[in-house]
Length: 432
Image 1 (cartoon, rainbow, N blue to C red):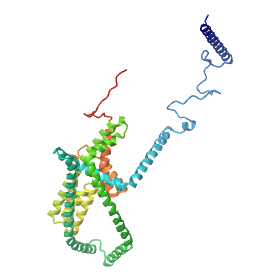
Image 2 (image 1 turned 90 degrees about the horizontal axis):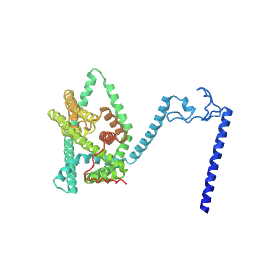
Image 3 (image 1 turned 60 degrees about the vertical axis):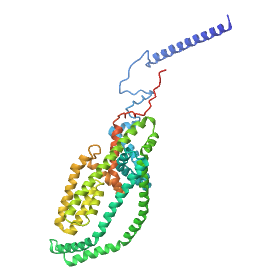
């Protein structure tokens, strides 16, 4: 017998002897369990009742839907669910608070970029027309941007000239209106005496004198803010130019930063949100123009001063839905009251209300459509939050931001697979 065969026989005998010893120990242990009355797999023994407590037995592992300790078991299920929701909401609130602090610290950059996006959405169709007319992209962007600036500067020049021309007449009529109000307070149902009027006037002058320092500090703050406004205006111009010229390249760069599996869905949602923003801005401009023309016609018919500046104010106010139109219309009614009396002011008020009703029930549903429809409660809450966070600019940006987020979230939640781009290359792996 060779050496290899002898080694193999030794290994086989050792394996068989090991199996025999294991079997003998298993039989001996089963016999001990049977003598002690302990249940075993081969001899189950008596079963304890459900309420019995087994001394020395390990606690069963908790099921996935059960609590992990007796303290949790004593807490009602609804309270545990509420606590779980609460700490998650607290985490979300802290993250949102941190984001707001970051945005607030760099608002001098964020706000101009937001305004530049709105202007880009407004001017993008014009750039597209010039590109289809074989204009170079940089030239088309420059032509549209310069044309828009010229239109804004021309309109502001007309408004300022009209305002300067009408200030003396309005000042004289304001004095007459104040005297009429004083006479009405004396002879009207209030029967205010001269001494009471003098006391009220003295209190008003005293309040102005006491708050002179506050007005001075506000003027100083306004002077400091003017530098920020000029800086923001330059940033708006540069950002608008590059958004119009290189918007697609910038968006593709941002999408490439995401994981590959999420790129197509994010790209689809982003382009849908941009389409919503373009539709919203164009519809808002059209609605604002119709509001300004409608109210301006009544101002011209009744020979109200500052008809052009008031129309421009109505146009700008229409960009802040609900609130802006009401405030700008209120200014027009107030000037009509001072200039032409309460009857004309009531007529102008009726015209303002009629135009706003036409806007809310006909123009916005017809022009904007369902794509950018937002509930009025969401509009009011968004405007209030925008005013608190960023003043007038926040109120201007809040509603389009809500419209964009509404479209993007709906698109992402729809779980739709975007269409494959025509220039996409699909690589398939071969089966091994």
